Image 1: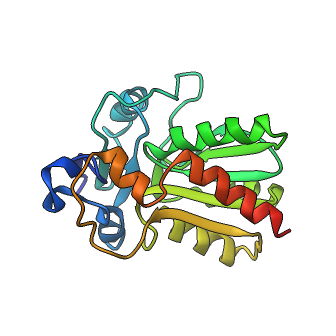
Image 2: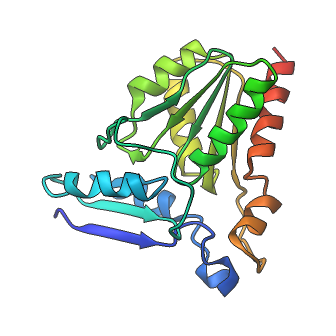
Length: 216
């Protein structure tokens, strides 16, 4: 049935309330449900673009929300379409593939790398299921290295879906996933503190990309 599930505070938004309020495995769990559409918007503007499109979508949708007040990095000039990735930036050296609030981190990392002379693409995957195989394939083919960034466990989320896509399309590029490891996140702290501990940061995205580039 075309139900709409709203995941308020996905990821580590509510980390200050303790470990029972951290949801770093929601995307992996719901991805296993047939016909489930999974969307992780990156800011309030994107949410506004999404909502009218949900009226006629024939399948159930899980919409992962952040805490609100996050940096707005999208605009109406780059239209939202369920199942289609948003190209935020284009370059041939590094491809960052991100979702949700980590798209802002990917953009920050791309700015840093650009200042160092690298050309960077940022592909925002707001729809994790069904994922945009076509654009991922196109941009990965054109990049030297690929890095995924997500506020979710590495297993079963965006990184896993991208890895499956690359392998099925026989694209063999240096590749790394940034996300939570396969552990229960038992710490108390702010969202930023939890993400920093596990390297879900723009700084680590820059470091990871440079590390991969150094091995080419």
